[in-house]
Amino acid sequence: MGASPQERPLSPEKAFRFSARALNPHTVEARFSISDGYYLYRDKLHFAVEPATSGLSVPPLPDGKVKEDQFFGRVETYRGNLIVNLQLDGTKPGQKVVIQAESQGCADLGICYPPNVQRVTVALPAADSAPTKLDETPRKQWFQ
Amino acid sequence: MRQATYWLWMGAAAVLALAGGAALAVWDQTPRDATKLLALSLPDTSGRQQSLDQWRGKVLVVNFWATWCEPCRKEMPEFVIAQRELGTRGLQFVGIAVDQKEKVEQFAKDLDLNYPALIGGYDAVDISKSLGNDLSALPFTVIIDRKGHVARTQLGPFKPGILRSTIDSLL
Image 1 (cartoon, one colour):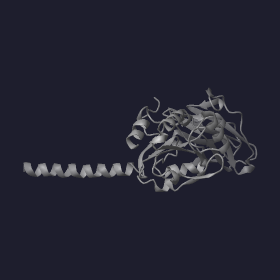
Image 2: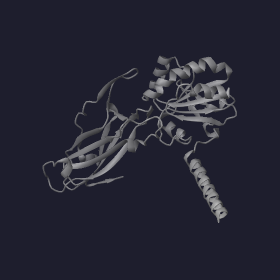
Image 3: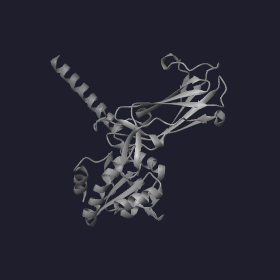
Image 4: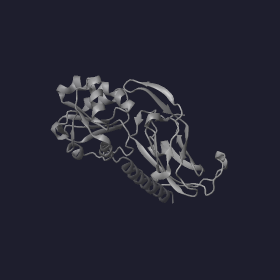
């Protein structure tokens, strides 16, 4: 079910819910849960981490749905869930990091949002361990 | 006893009506007065400052838009046609772009934009917020009558016919 024109549009924070959790001391899973009827632009998605010494490297983002835009040419969009595993080479076990995600998207009902920044604090595990399955990892995060 | 029950129901209905009215008043926070918007001055694509106050007395349609907003771009050709057909009767469109000057310039050229495109940058979102656009989304349009009162605000594109009928009723 997409958003109908009668619905009151969601705030960008609700339309594009951002969360992050540690998979191990050097990997953070960043996730966007995109509400039905809303989409994010691939080329407007940017990640940053604090402290800057965390040594963030962002892998190539997954392919999105390709759309030809009259003004911008080829653009890619995401719907549903988007997961990106961020590598942090400069972190220490047990450290806390702030993951910052800048995103920009629109709703099918015909509105777009300006770039929006969301931040999540993640506590990295104390001991180095292999990445655990998504549903088995306790959530250690504080939303700001 | 029956009469007492009647008045009890009437009282309850009155309380509910008042509460409903109050709830609506809280929901609709669109300012009716456009003084703040009309006092706004922003640069156009050539860098010249343009005050919205210069169009006071006209039916003014202020459209917050951006090139990165596809729904915004889609409805703008209709604005161009309306400006061409009704400009002599006192209609004035003004676009406030939440965008970079270079992109606005290019798009205005592509579309043969026949009304001013002012550059608001991302700060323009805050201006639209003060006019009821609490989601900071685009397109957001404010129609102001000749007396400087907000006649209508619209988040998202206008439905077919709504823009013209609103303008017609004000010209």
